[in-house]
Length: 268
Image (cartoon, rainbow, N blue to C red; front, top):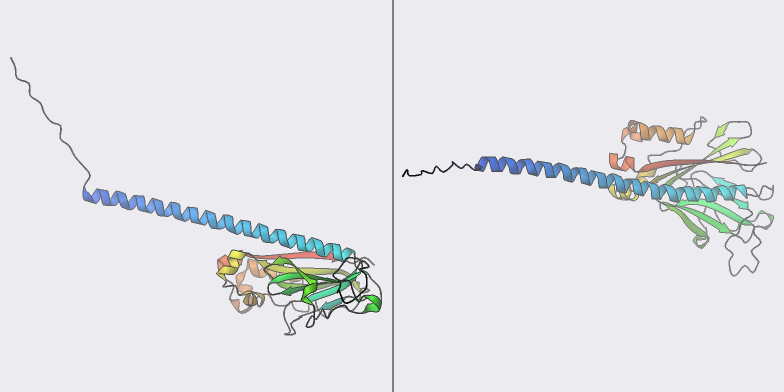
């Protein structure tokens, strides 16, 4: 009888160095995946914020378009276009005009709402606001001190869009020229009003520490050379070095900025 002999196969395991290397590789892969996920989430949130902001602003511009279409053009009811409403030489414009639209009526006024109101638009605390007052329109009387607005009744204003920090008016004149200043005093010489607005997304504003005034200062009034406001401001976004002082916002803030323009023809 022959005795059987058994041979145990040699066994081998991972060394400590190999385990450390494998752990490091896994950690790097997880870090890359985490960054990709975070970046994707930020892009998605930024896109959603831009869509929401853009939707609100489109709605506000559509309402503005309806107001311009309903404007009343009479010699005794002139529009009021105010450049640099804050009086600092540069800054947000404001405007108002009479239109065939419903508006707020003061309880003490005693008159009925006759469907003719003074409609006004302005920027207040980073919001685009619309005012509508139905009282005091007869014979050109202004129902509130707006613009310029120092004595305006805030109860007559509604917020149309949030985080809108810049409003600039340009005017297409009867002779075909584009004017930024001075503002026209009546409808006769105006063929279209050009409204340019700048807004920022919520996340981008948080990254800028809520400094809307600082952002507004980066979009100065265009020079009186007939250039379009949106062209000058859009060039700044495309070429950040063109910002005043050569100091643009940070890239995340820059990505959150949007410029919108609407042209409102004035039918004679």
